[in-house]
Length: 511
View (cartoon, helix red, strand yellow):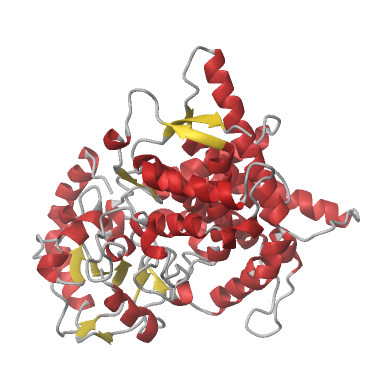
């Protein structure tokens, strides 16, 4: 999170409302009890200035002082930060239900997006039905296996685009360097497009697909920006940084295009056109309710919101993880050699790597786990909110407390990991630790009721996408860069990206 000069101006102006806010807080937070340790805050703004540009890193730095549970006051928002596997285990095993609501950012309330959202929706009947529907109809292993050919197609297209771009660079007299990040995101976006809508959205012919992509990219940009109105609610009506106004504009563009996709499908159904295999859009449109908790069909607006959400979740997290994996491998040439040797030994050069090969590639899987340990896509996971006053590890946590799980810090916990700051895939070769939410020292996709619904799908895309890039090309850095001088800095947004997008030279591997 990065505070600009305009952010600081509005924070300073907010001090004028200090007396009113402090009085309001006394009424709101009437409960008393022992709180977790944390730094003292400023009047009105509390610990907002302590967030810095990289809050997950700053929280981790003060863990030796305050311990694995950190208490902050961010403006008017009580906040608890979980920073150890033990504290995470206590939360997810014993308090998951009471900590299962969402703290909804003001930007996500644009056009009432949060009311139809699975990721940001409040825990309740609609949320449970929607999650069950998406899980059973799309993301169980049987469904995932049936759509393997779609993921293979999108990854094959990515390999072709990389090759063409490198060739074009050389034809212009360049080194053949490509921006890897761009192709990863386009691939992931098309995978989601095929699973949700049975179509490639991004190719040289689809102007509508590129319009949708651009609008969605802006939505993700606004969703990742820090917003003073989230911490000082009396500023929401003013929207001082213009984030909600911009989100309303670009979310509106995205929803308008998605509406056209949905209307086209409805018209196809009405005209008698039948598809051989259902996608998620078919499932959502055909749902008739359960006759009890959700008696009616899912509204058209909520169908559109669910489709958009799958694009947000599916494209950013998978592409950023593969980018970090490629970055770490280029930064650690010995690991790159080991993974290439494994691919050569198990797959060879006579055929393409496939999803069915992944279980036989233990070092590849170890590289992915180590990448997710050091670079979880959403370092603080999505903010939770407590539904009632709760006694947690000896502390009284009031209702409506924001709960942040620092997966980035947990992956660096010195009590759980040997040399926690080093990239060492070998640590996972003789380990049963997985990232499916049961081993609390590695929870990049969360755990409990709110664990990422697309975890199994992400596992397939990340492993196959990385393996395909490595099998197809020998990767090198340009002459001005070396493994030792690579930029490894992070950039906070909706996901944890590289500050400088990864660029490298792909050279077609000899057969």
